[in-house]
Amino acid sequence: MVPWTWRFEKADGTEVSPSVEPDEFSTQGDAESWLGEYWKELLEGGVEQVRLFEDTTEIYGPMSLSEAQTA
Image (cartoon, rainbow, N blue to C red; front, side):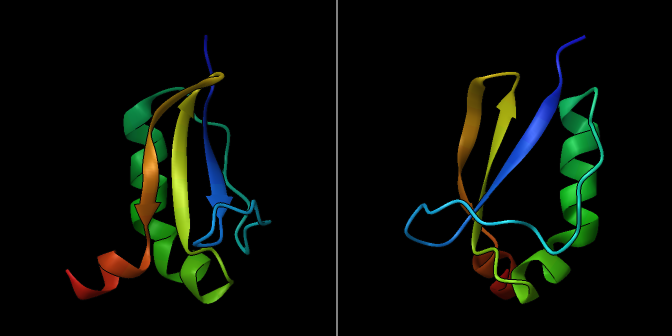
């Protein structure tokens, strides 16, 4: 089974460590549900945007977490 992972970044694309450690995800839906639950804590901890990967393939991103705050 291929793992789904998030890459956590500053707005300039620099990778940062998340304030909340993610689980290992077996599906895209699980990964997205986790992000939906923890995006505020991640943003408060210095993560400004994320990218979603299926194994080593980028599925989408960068996705701003600060834009979710205004949505």
